Image (cartoon, rainbow over all chains, first blue to last red; front, top):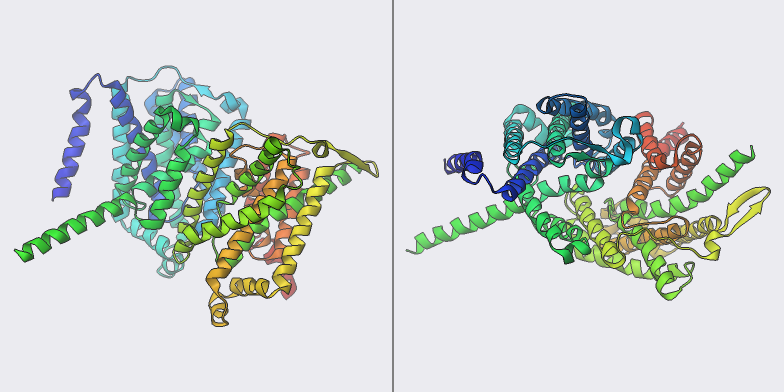
Amino acid sequence: MYRSIGLGVVILASLIFPAIAPHAEYVLDILFLMLLYGAMATSWNVLGGFTGQVSFGHAAFLGIGAYATALLVAAGWPLWATFPAGGLLAAFYSLLIGPPAFRLRGPYFAIATIGIGEATRLIALNWSSLTGGASGVTLGAAPPAVVQYYVALGLCAACVGAAAWIKRSRFGYALAAVRSDSDAAETLGVNTTIAKTQALFISAFMLGVAGGAYAMHYLYVSPDSTFGFSTSISLVIMPIIGGIGTIFGPLLGAAIFTALREQLEANPFLAKYSLDLSVFGLLLCGIVLFEPRGLLGIFERLVRRGTATTRKDSVSE
Amino acid sequence: MQDTLATLISALLAAGLYATMSYGLALIYGVMKIINLANAGVLMLGAYVTWWMWDAYQVNPLLAPLVILPLFFLLGVALERVAVRRVMEQEPIISLLLLFGVWLILQNVAYALWTGDTRSIETPFVEATFKLGGIQLAWPRVYVFFAGALTLAVLQLFLTKTQFGRAIRAVSQDRDAARLAGIEVERIYSVAFGIGIALSAFAGSMLSLLFPFGPDFGRALQLKSFCIVVLGGLDSFVGVAFGAIALSIAEAFGLRYMPASLQNLISFVVLVVVLIVFPKGIAGIIRSLRRV
């Protein structure tokens, strides 16, 4: 009950926010990034969290979506139409790489995905007749910040909504079964390879669409920015910080990641020594060592402790 | 013909190095059943420490392993005691993520101490070449091959002939049975992790003689190591050697038909082809041949 009221308030607030603060361009910019990264983290989570197949190569799908938007806009397509096109391209690319990659399990799959990401980047870099090689592709003009904000809001809401629906569907239970025990899932009649491939397909589609929003915002795509390993790293880090496999964890992780990165880049001392790597590395190690369920897990623990003490108080009274 | 022979020889020389850098990964996996993703960072730091000793203190890069081997062994033992041990009993992906975090931190160490500039070691030895039967060979490549082969031979002797080495192999075969036989499994874990890390750093030190490097140096090599252990099977010494030779030959001949910028793609293509055609790797094929 409280939960749905809280959710309603958040949705309403995010819808009318630009009307209240129409000139807060910087704030809108940060919110845009939080929403975009939230959508990206949610997409990763469908495969990495729900299905337990951690991928270090998801930048490939983001990059395909971003390039699709950049190139199709240059070819005269309207911007809105390029988003689903990018999503579909990324999703079909996932069908190409899913079947061989899913021959590997767990950690083996994870390492092979580093190869997928790297191979995709190299192809983008060397196929210069299509992608413009290392110099990348530049887009014309960006829509106003308010429009961008609503695009990201819609995208993020759609991704989170889809993730929530998947998690509670029969398909979502099949994915959960694959995550906890692949062999047991197989004996229960789940075709694990098909389930994983479907999860990857959905995840890639969402990321492809998000890639379009990425290109719309930055107006520039290059192999190193979109296909880069650092993009894949951030896609892994955000859901883990927030709470892997949950619905709102990736959003929380994306918000924290974006805010933290803004701070780290603004600080000349930290930026000079690229301390962002250490900060995120330590966060990752800390969460894995002490609370694998991420910040949502810590939060839940605190809430439980809070309610436990109130109960104790009422008993003593 | 001459050309093919030269390519083949340089491929074999590279294989010695590939085997060294992959064996650390395979040893840690064999004993602890975890994949050391921090391997990439350790390779990179091994290269940096070698370069830094040469650049700042004029230490001959060939002597660097004398410092690197014990230093990284201790680092590995410490890492195992502080962090890795705590996630051993959890799902494999947890230790992978932990070591991924360690890799990020190691990369940061390199950025902070030595910036993101590309470094390379230039000594007369590094640039020296000689001719053997009309084939031009680089001295550092020959040296690296023999240093790697020697190290692996010593390690193999240690694992097969000494009491402690046998205990390590016992743990990798069956940790519960080893515990019942009175082996202190936790201690074996520390030592095996230390040896694995030291081997990787040693391989990094060798690599610094052959290639320029930066803080992100280890990633492509990590992929090659992984390709090699998938080819050869994660826990067999002979398999690793086979995998290293197969990959380096594929790379050497592949490079004759494609631009050098695509070299790192080769290991990935080999990996995919092997996964589709021989899901059990070369080691699986050898094993099934033996059974027949």
